[in-house]
Amino acid sequence: MTSSMLFNVTTFTYLISMIVFFTFLASKNKSLGLTGSFIAYAGFAVQTVAIALRWKESYDMGVGHAPMSNLYESIVFFSWTIILIFAYIDIRYKYRVVGAFVVPFALLGMAWAQLGMNTGIEPLVPALQSNWLLYHVITCFLGYAAFAVACGISIMYLVKAAVEGTDSATPAGGLMSMFPPLRVLDDLNYRAIMIGFPLLTLGIITGAAWANYAWGTYWSWDPKETWSLIVWFVYAAFLHARITKGWVGKRAAWLSVIGFAATIFCYLGVNLFLSGLHSYGSSKM
Image (tube, rainbow, N blue to C red):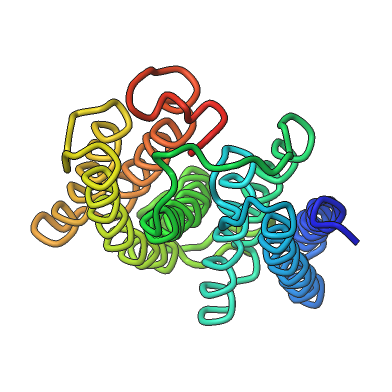
């Protein structure tokens, strides 16, 4: 059994989980919601083993590095962190319906990685040969994953608010009855961002330390660094507006969605389309 085979199993498992969650939405059968969560957890377990196995395979090949060094490996790890943060929210708050809006993010990442990328294990370029790689990637992607969960929850909020209105005293029936109350969705969005923001902050700090190790400067206004700072400011503005101005509801939800869009561009757009010190990001992190 190779890591690639296990990643294929992971992708299929997340697909089944998403289908079960969608069926849960349509049928309102609570047992299906629990089943969808368990299937997602099973995929997470398989993916964890696959990541560990790929790490071992790199040492067997004489390369020997954590499987987080190229675009394929980073997307796989990103999907893993999304399910990790989802599992935390799911186990703690037990709003199973959130899975229908979060698991698809992990599935899309895995499907894209498996179908459209070079999956080979390659030696690290000199700039990546540092323990800072592990610290930086883990903190950044845990932050990104929390923002992905917040985005999924925000989409739920906007859909529910559009159907029943933010000032409606009578909750909508039908599909919307499966969603948590608007105030709960708003609070979950805030809590997810409160998880992601300090992790992103740590990611930027460890990235600066890594940049000093690799290039001799903590900050060079490289496009990747600049966009990381933009993302940080978006979520800092979210927290500032919420704490000092009482921003809740639709404005907070839209800002969360915008923040995740900026996060995705920082992660993928900069790597694939912009040149700079991170220009190797088209194939490397």
